[in-house]
Length: 94
Image 1 (spheres, rainbow, N blue to C red):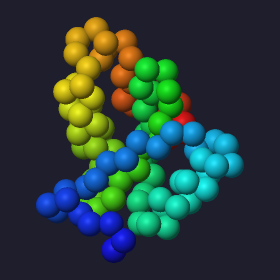
Image 2 (cartoon, rainbow, N blue to C red):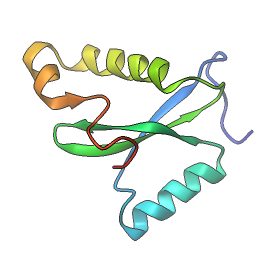
Image 3 (cartoon, rainbow, N blue to C red):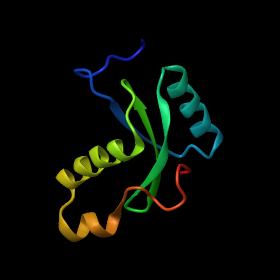
């Protein structure tokens, strides 16, 4: 594998801007490196992100919970509630 697996756990990536040409190339790079696109997207402070994972298989639901925990450690209370949408409306499109 190109990327190491962190202690046997999946590695989570948020990728911005997959819609424009540069973003599509970036997404292709990550896919060639072995990352897989999950079935949900996030919106953090109004910015849409695709969610990619690397490593052992994990369900969207389980990874969403990990994703939420990560952002809850950075943003508290009302900031988290207003600005962190996991999953974002629209499913797996960012």
